[in-house]
Structure formats: C-alpha cells, structure tokens
Image (cartoon, rainbow, N blue to C red; front, side, top):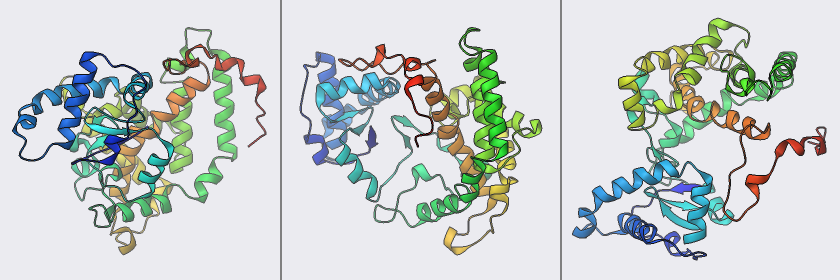
Amino acid sequence: MSLTESSGSSPLLHTSRKCSRPGCLESIAHYLQLLDLTHSRTNIFAWMLKPVNRLITLYQGFWSNSGAYLYRKRLIHGPNFVCAGGVWLSEFDTIRKNLIEPQARAFKLASSTLRKVALPACNLGGRFNFLLSLSQRGAGGHGDWEACRMCVEDHIFTKDCLKRMNDDICNELLNYLAKEYGATGMKNEGVFFSNLDGGLADFLLRYLHYVIFGLDPFDESIINPIRNFHYKTASAAYHIDILGAVLQRFVFRKWPHHFREVARIYQESPAISVLEENQPKYNYMTRSELAALMVSIMSLAGMVGPLTLGKILLGRRKLCPFEGQPTKDIDVTKVWDTLNLDDR
C-alpha cells in the first residue's frame, strides 16, 4: 500500500466501494479524517476538531504498522481510504500513476511523522537532502531531489555494488550464515534470529555494508559502531517523531553521536570516498552530505526491511493474518524444498 498526503478535495477520496459494515467508532473516525483532509479554510467546525483528529492519527498511525489492520480498512472502505492523517492507496493502476508522476513530499514515512531534528542536515549541518522529504520538480521541488538521487545512484548502487554481490567475500559471508543457522537455527529458542551479535542480523549487517559501501565486513572496528547504532540502539526509532524524542531523552542519549560516528565510517567507505565534491549535476553535494543521507536511509530501510523479510522467509515470523485469507496458516518452511534455486 502507498500513502499520499492531501491538502484538499481529491477524487481518490471518492473511489471507495464498501465491502463490509464498519462499527460506529470506525465510521466516526473515518468521517473525521475525511473532514480533516478536505475541509475549507473557513470551516470552523473542522478546525475545532483538529485536536481530536490528531489523537485519531496517532492511534491509527500505531496500528497501521500492521498489514492486517490496513487490510481490514480496505475491506470496509474500499481500495482507497483515509487513515492516520493521509490517503492510502491499494489499487495497482492508481499506485503506479502516483509513483511515476512528480511527487510532493512531506516529513512522513508511511503513517509515521518523521522527526526533523534527526534527519541528515540537522545532525551534520549543511543542506537538507533527505530524499523521502524532498519534492520533485513539477510538484513544488527545485531540483534538489533529482540531484541527490542522481548522486546516490552514481556512487552507491553501481556496477561495483553488483559485482560485490557475487564475489568471494560474499560467498564467505553466505557460508558464515549457513554455519550459524546449522549451529542454532530454530532449535535454540530462536538464537539465530534474536542474537544481534550473530545469526541473521549479524550476517545482514556485514553483507549489506560490504555490498552497498564496500566496507570490510570482517573489520570489527567498523562493524561494532554500525551494529551499536542500527541494531542495539534502534536507529529507525531515532527518526520517528515523538517516539524518537522520548527515547533519546530517557534511553538513547548518545544517538546524535552514534549517527555522526556511522556517517564518518560511511564517508570513508570505498563507495562514497571517491565522490568528487561540488559538481553542479549533483547540486554541489559533498561526501559528508551523501554519507549522512545514507545513514538515514540505512536506518529506516536497509536495516529493517531485509531483516523482517529474512525472518518471514525463514519461518520465524508468520505471514500477515489478513481477514478472510489463509495467509496465517501458511508454513513457508514446507515450501522450501519445492523451489528451484537456480531459476532466476
């Protein structure tokens, strides 16, 4: 599913086709969210309800991390619906159209509001360059998104990155993963999945940072600070509004220091260290700016998505229990032996 922000009446809000009867509270919440997104500037009633909608957004924002919750919303309200302060899309053609057209972006990550002070420019100084919050040309942007995106593509996701995926070092890491799984696997109370210093998490940390940045996956002076920030202090939470501020105040007070430490490691990596700074086509982007951008990207995507996917594919985490679907009863481990691993 995809989330877009709306500041006025949108045809997307009128394409819902109800498939199930909502409860009373669900109907009220949905109406209030619709009102909040589409009301005119002179609607005093809507402005008075802003605090109520804020609470509804916080509540729905928490639950919308669950695919089952969103699927239930889809069954009730149709393929496009409002939830957690935005419009959610689940029709392929609608999503495709919105993705290939210029996008106006805000400080949002799906249902969560991003914490501005945790984003790259605020941590290291300089210009704001976080791609998920930069609008494109034609949607209010001034070319910063295009320049930063080009810099990332030209220096991070390159032919060298693809080569590293299949070299001897990667094979050594895969052998390490197989050895870890053979020694622990699902036998020893899930140590393979829960141990941050070994098993699946440790493999992904080393593998991704080698493939993407060219960092030495066996240099503990590099791996330990990265592990400490991304895994042991939950770097993704650092970027989330309210939650990040609370955790930094009471638990992870050294988050900004860890961010800068990991950014320095990224900046000195083979991938980023070769960047020739101050090129017009990259909008004069510097190595430190690119490194800081990649710290946030790895925090919110690189270190969360692959680990979650790995746990699902290896049977540790069940498939989402979608209402009316058999997904919760599927045992993925019984499918393994039917797969042709040589079929790309």
